[in-house]
Each structure stands twice: as C-alpha cells, then as structure tokens.
Image (cartoon, rainbow, N blue to C red; front, top):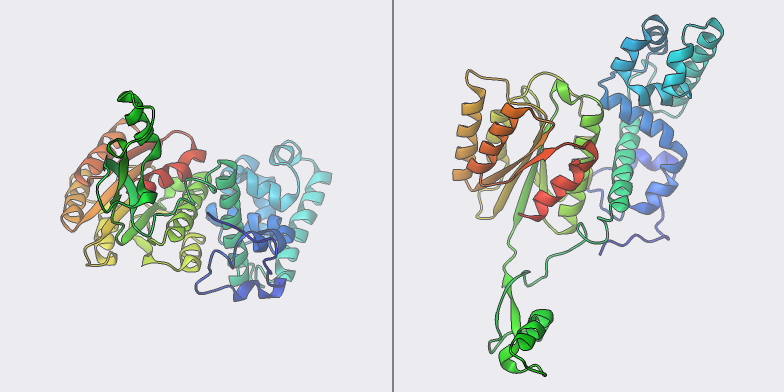
Length: 391
C-alpha cells in the first residue's frame, strides 16, 4: 500500500531547484505537495498551463495587447485557464469587459504584477523565459494534481497500490496438492466447492489453491502524442496519464520509459526507475507538427532491453499518422516488426474519427495489445492504468 507520512520533511522554498536525479516517491510525496507547492500553486499552475498551450515566454506587453486587440483569438491562443490565472479575473469576465478603458488599465496592471511576481520568485528570467526553477515548480504541480485525481477516483489505495507478490501474482486455481503453501489456499473457492458437494465441513479434497505466475521483468514505454492537435487540455491529461503510469509502475517495481513524438521523436527515455527523470521529461512537452507513429515504434525497439522480458508500448494519440506515402500501412508494418521483437502495443485513442478507430483497432490486433477509445478526457489516466495493469 502507498503510505505517505505526515512527518515527511519538505525542503525549504530555495531548495526546490535541488530536487533532481532519482526523485523518489517519498521525496516528492504528500508532505512536499502540501508544504512546498501550497503557497505557489497558482504560479505553478500558470506555468504548467503556459507550457500546455505552447506559450514560450511571458512578455507582458505582448500578452496584454493580444487580450485587448482580439480577445476571441487570445482565448484560442492562451486558453481560459491561463487568462484567469494571469489576470486574476474569470476569463469570461475579461471577455465581457476587455473593451472598457478603465478595465483595460486594471487588466494591464494585473498582468504586469503577476509577471513581476514570477520574476521575483525566479520562475522566469529577465527575458521573460521560463527558468529551471519554474519548470521544476510546474513539474511538482503536474505531479500533485494527478495524485489528487487518482485519490478522487479511489485509485491510490487499490488499483495503483496493488503490488505483485514476491512469489508471483495469483492466477487460476487447482486442486490442493502436496507442497502447496497454506497462504495460497483459495478459501472462498474452496468453500463454494464444498457447498456444491453438499459437505458441511471442508475436507482436503475440497481445497483449491491459487496458481502462482512468475513475475519477471516488466518494461513499459508510454508514447505521448505531442502533435499540434493535442494542444491545451488534451496535452495536460496526456501528461498526467504519463505521471500516473510512472507512479503506478515504479510502485510495482517495474521500469517505465517515455517517447514524446509528433512528426519526429522529440524526446525519449529508456525504461527506468528514475521518477524524477520521467517527470522532468513529461512536464515541458509542447504540442506541434504532425503525427508519425512509425518513428515511435522504431525508437521503442531501440529503447527496450534485448533481454527476454515483458515489453509493452502504450501509444496515446488523437489522430491518424499523417507522415509518409502510406502512413496507415507503414504504421502497421512497424507494429508487426515490433511484435516480432517481443514488444506488444496498445493504443489509446482520443476522440478518433471512424477511419482513425479502424486503424487503431488494427494496430492493437497486430501488436497483440488492446485498443481504447477516449470520449471523456478525464478518463485518460484511468484507461492508461487499466492497460498497464492488464500487461
């Protein structure tokens, strides 16, 4: 079971940037979440939202001018959450009042004050670019928000925290044999067996014991689509699903890798037990360009170890592959090659069209994996965990 201690000592504010390397779950657990992030959650959320929207800098004059010149376009560019966080006003309220001169002056003042605050905290530099400290805070907010999500869905105490036995996972049952362990007796099934036989007491012949499946090495890679269509909310939930997967897998002593892709592979981490590295890779992802799944599969083959072990790729995408002469056929060929190398492939599709669903199903079939269609964005992390737990 995952247990967080209330006595966990969190580092001081100035120590945030020192959290690097193998950030263990105890090091960035609940204590840090509620002591370090609590006072900076708004700033961290603002930075995280800016990254998800592809905003490269916090230039105050440019942001303000976008608001007052064409608010509808600004809302598309920045998103309502960013506008609310940087202005201190509800985004709809800004939209209704942005043409009023008095409100414009107040809006400009608030935007300047917020960005000055980010600079004073060392979260952006003098050129209004995000600093390492700002990225670190955004990573912590991403992590803590997803832990809150998992807790609200009752996934922390059961699904995520279920650990495989040292002796393997419980599977099917067989009739009790000499040498079977007492702890492996399937008591409920044994009782049902006795009742079916009309027995009032359990006899040796009624007993069933669980088969134990050997739990060998498990390596998971999360393929995160960062193409242009993933911008904003979709990218945020995709990142959080990656955090949830990393959290769950490392708790179960499995190794997790990440491939961030669009037209090219943007970044990649081979399966590892370094949670901090995974978090730092996922947090800064921005959306751009088209989708090329073939490159992801090629990279996955490169990153997975050559040893005989469970190797599973979870692809998350909201669109068909669009790069290549025949993207669909080339993708299926790449999935087949990966399968020959011992890699299974599942695909999580976000609001795919009919043609996209058809290809996704074929990818899962050829890759000996599973296909999931996402209709509600808040379900992405649950679906990714479901796929992982079925490996």
